[in-house]
Amino acid sequence: MASNTAPLSLVDLSSQLSSTVERASQYVVAIRARRRIPSSGIIWRDGLIVSASHTVRRDGRVPVTLPSGDSVEATVIARDPETDLVVLRADGLPAPASRAESNESSVGSLALAVGRPGRATTASFGIVSAVIDGWRSHQGRRIDGVLRLDLSVYDGFSGGPLVSASGGVIGLNNSALAGGAAAALPTAVIDSVVDDLLSRGHVSRPYLGVAVHPVTLASSTVSQLQLDRADGLVVLSVADDTPAERAGILVGDVLLEITGTPLTKPANLYDALLATKAGEPVSIRLVRGDKTATLAVTPIDRNSGGE
Image (cartoon, rainbow, N blue to C red; front, side):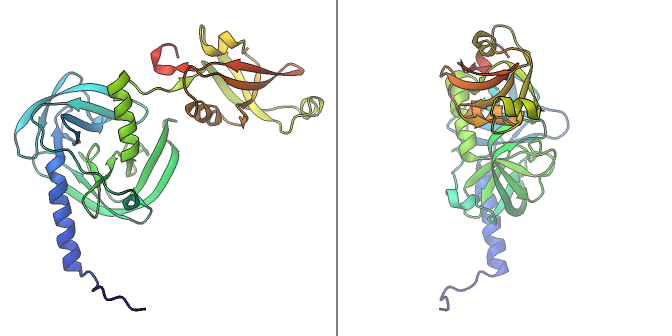
């Protein structure tokens, strides 16, 4: 059945995109906390700015240029290295950014990267090319979700908004997450991190205190112990006064499962811990010598003490 809706002309599309950038420019600031060009930031909540942490290279008070051209001083109040997010507080900020609908960040959606690497707003245009849950950065950091982008993120764009065609924010641009490729933190991830940073000063990430490496058990051991697979993680070290030490995990143990999740690579252990809460016990099945054992371990918040 033919549609009665007239197709959007290129002129109409161009005008709509230009209007979208203009609306977005009202909540994009320039942060002057590094040499050369400033970086971008988003007025995220009343009195709060978020940006990419690697672009804000000073702590304490930093100058910020508002959309009006006026300058204010903002204070860096918290950072999260894992997601490369920094939160700043300032007085006299205009209204915060509006959020896009969840379906506006699906694969193939049109998107605009907006930045303010100085007084003027700049932009680039493309699409969301992938929505990735459980993204692992090139530094090995695990992030709940990342949007991969098919557009250009120019100098000074990191920390600025990724905007949908309707003008709502769908993410925060960051070229460092994917080793220089265009990517963005989704709004849900930003809100979760900001909530943690404001409430406790850091993001809670449970940990055990072990260093591990993938290993394949000998077929004779697999047969003798009646294991369903040969892969596991051998414990290379156990840090002092950590949950692993207190639970009795030893160097040389081969970890097979944590709460029923098979452990075949270090990322499995890290991801399983992220799905738990600090202070709640988990069970770890392991091989020690010619026997298997199951130990109860209570992870603690990695950022509350220890390593």
